[in-house]
Length: 96
Image 1 (cartoon, rainbow, N blue to C red):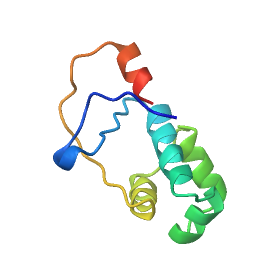
Image 2 (image 1 turned 90 degrees about the vertical axis):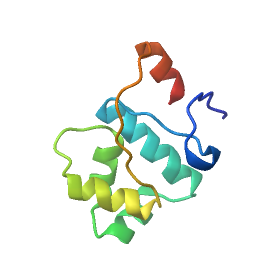
Image 3 (image 1 turned 120 degrees about the vertical axis):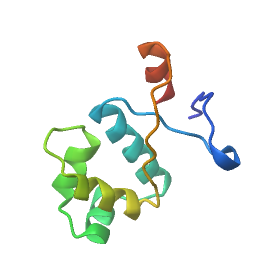
């Protein structure tokens, strides 16, 4: 599947934009699957439970920042914070 994304960062890497826990979870799931990892694989690499990885990917409330940081590291990702760009909600939905 190809994602149409007009946003690119340094080096031309695609930037994924998440404005909700559900969008962030979908992005993490996509990268996990792209790396051919199961939720159990990620859990084992982070000392977290598989259910915790599932909850994060589903955008459930209550995820600790430490948990997010551990999963990002396990997937070789980093978090970048920047001011919001002006766009319609449908534009953002199309990105993920």
